[in-house]
Amino acid sequence: MKVVAVGGGHGASSTLRAALNYSSEVGGIINVSDDGGSSGVLSEQLGVLPMGDIRNCLAAVAANDAAVEIFQHRFSSGPLKGHVIGNLWLAEAAERLGSFISAVNAASKLLDCRGEILPPTLEPIRLISEVDDRFVEGQVNVATADGLISYVSLDPPEPEVYEPAVRMMTSADQIILGPGSLFTSVLPPLLVPGMTEALKRSKGLKIYVCNVAAPPGETANFDAAAHLTALFAHLGDSAVDVMVAHSGRTPAGDGPIATVDIAAIERLGVQTVLADVLPDDREPRHDHNRLGEVLRTLDKMG
Image 1 (spheres, helix red, strand yellow):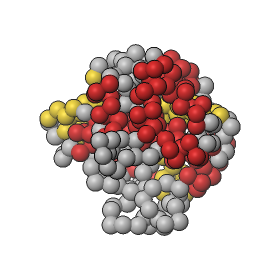
Image 2: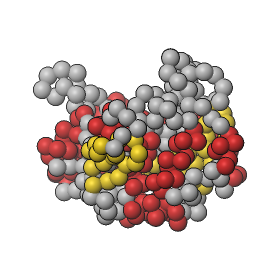
Image 3: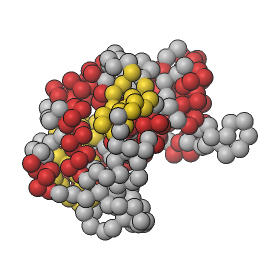
Image 4: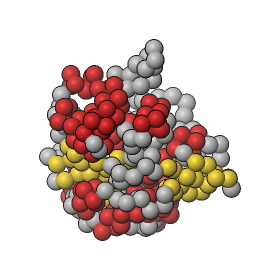
């Protein structure tokens, strides 16, 4: 079975780790619109694509644990404070080898990765959103904007798609969207027009993994069905076949839980699979082993 995770941040990393539990062919199509932190600084100063999400996903599928520990180290003081060694390594490799993809491929060999990680485009892209009738630019600004997000789009609006990512998408048996920040991590890779079309053409089972909690910010008032409604508004109503949602132990902390109205989800034409996917400490995130066991069973639905 070929499994492809789409998104960014820690959510896509969790999905990739989950997929390694049951699939021999794992890949990721990962967000490159991030403009915050170390990744954003290096992108602005060196003209390289933002690499933070891709770095995290390379680490998620890596077999060389010793190399990962170094690759993921973030400096806590001095002139490099806030920078991650892996980001610096990828920026240097892109300059030395002549392309961002060459740098990603070299990092994959260094880390002994068990899956292929690709960007949706090699063009610099910027996230744009309308929030309460005002335009907001940049992923960090969109993620922290105070108000209701109406939509997100890319600048430029039609960046050239990276064709290997299209082939990865259209050949997948499972395409897993999420978990993660809906508007700033999950949607951006799919807003590249060629990726939107590839998702529509793919015959693979399209799965949306809903967040286990509703954190403050861009989807603070969203239930599970609202996530699907936003996805369909951007990608079309064939974007998701099955939603995986948490059911069981209450997540730790005081944040609101993402409620699941099965009837509302099914009215959208999506099947719901409920499972306890929290880790033992009940932190509001997905346990990749538990998530992997749930995703393993979905191959029978394709």
